[in-house]
Amino acid sequence: MGVEAELETLAEAAHGFKGADQERAFTRALDFLNRKLKPKLLETRRLMVNDHGPGGEILSIAWPSGRILWRRPNHRATEVSTLPGGHVLYIEDPKGVVTEIDSDQKVVWQYKTDKVSLVSAQRLENGNTLLVDDSAPRIFEVSPEGKVVWSVEKPEYKGMAMRRARRTAAGTTLVAVQVAGLLLS
Image (cartoon, rainbow, N blue to C red; front, side, top):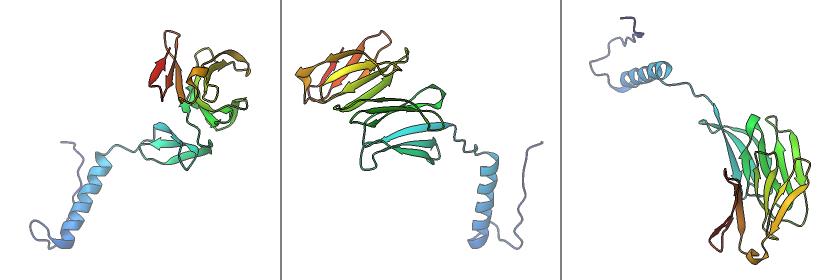
């Protein structure tokens, strides 16, 4: 019928196989099924993991194998995101450094500031980067040249853990204030 098959003979084995014969038959059958039916383990996906805990790093992991492709320190920062072309945007140091690296892990863009506590970064469609500084607290946007395009401070939320900010498709900006249980627009 044109169907691929393999024959394994076990000389002097009893019907139903027992002991070593059973193990050999089972191992050979599994090997055949794995070779013929099991899809090859393709590492076609990449996961970005942010270890905000003791490791204090971001990791690129092949999926589904779990193999670590690379890792970079991030000083326990809270943000990592993938960008087109295999680029990665992440808060490298919550005290004021946001970095974009290319698929070879070379720095292609970086924004540095001081006296801040960066907790959120999002690359926007216009090329700017939306950031949240929890110490002020404030939301601000920087251009690819590193210039602040706009900034809004919300001192009434100081100490209330201003966290993630995201630009919506409608062009509004949403910001979570954790302790207050608010989502601001």
